[in-house]
Picture 1 (cartoon, rainbow, N blue to C red):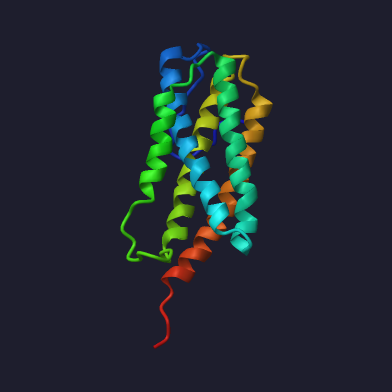
Picture 2: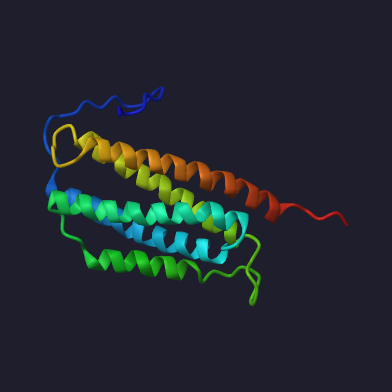
Length: 181
């Protein structure tokens, strides 16, 4: 899979050199922190929507997001990049703290809660896609990065984005619709 050709986009040529291991470690651990938060957010949304049409659509997405986090850990292991536990914990804590926002409802769920969860998941999937794309390009100079595996991860991210976006739009329209009165 080649990098997309966007009009006006910078045209980068592979250098043929491998990645700086220290910087790659920082980059992948930052993505692991995001993947940890995304996995938690997706699992919680799947649980709260269980039994509904949204739940049936999001459950496989949540499972795929969890598999992608595992794939990232596998790639990090293959590259010899150590996991920085403090970043994993920070991702976990950030997701939990993100739930503590004023939403105008003390007891019942806020109408925009699901919309915001879906928007957070979409942003996470977009970030994950960017990571897979970078790794795919780095694979030209590093045989430890399997291009077929990365292509599969990119395709799964595309499918996740489509599902999340369709439900995000529906949920936003429903939550923000005015009632006749």
